[in-house]
Image 1 (cartoon, one colour):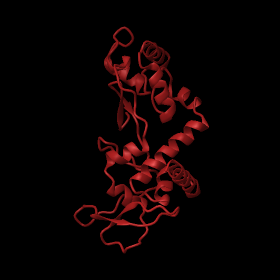
Image 2 (cartoon, helix red, strand yellow):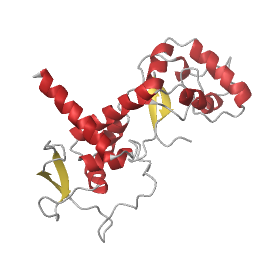
Image 3 (cartoon, one colour):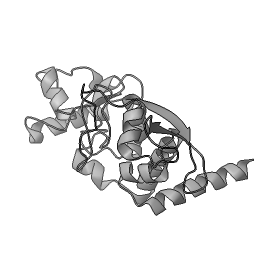
Image 4 (cartoon, helix red, strand yellow):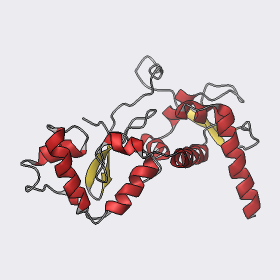
Length: 227
């Protein structure tokens, strides 16, 4: 079952960022990361804020452990520990599902014999894909939010669930380089606004730091042009 779910017109959607705890508390740590350090009582170290300079000349307010020397490099675990899970989650999933009365939000007994079977189909875990996916597609095609849901699926690059009348495989096949770049830039912008350094952003997103520096330079140039 999906560990973290967002809402599409009132229906639960599973969205699981790779680097954070989801708002419901489910752990979703990235592969290869060790558990966060705690003291002898199982508590995480307290933090304080220190302003430093980023590699592209920007001076975000970074969160550094209280026992760190001034100017110490902030690592990903420290940043994740100091950032509220809900805020970090939204930074990594910056596109919100459409709001409104979605057809999939309520059980359709004409298509599914039980609410759970309908939920499983939309979660991408159908009991019988040959039967349940066509039934779910019929629900989507009659939904007033279909167009908005399809745009959300493209922008968010959803890859786990049945959404906008499409299976996870069909959603992935629709992906374009444009939406990949757009989402990455939104993530970079949101994480940088939270005070993450270039290195931390690159680590969280699994990208080369030079790519992140390029995004940040672009943002700085846009800000200067707007002044």
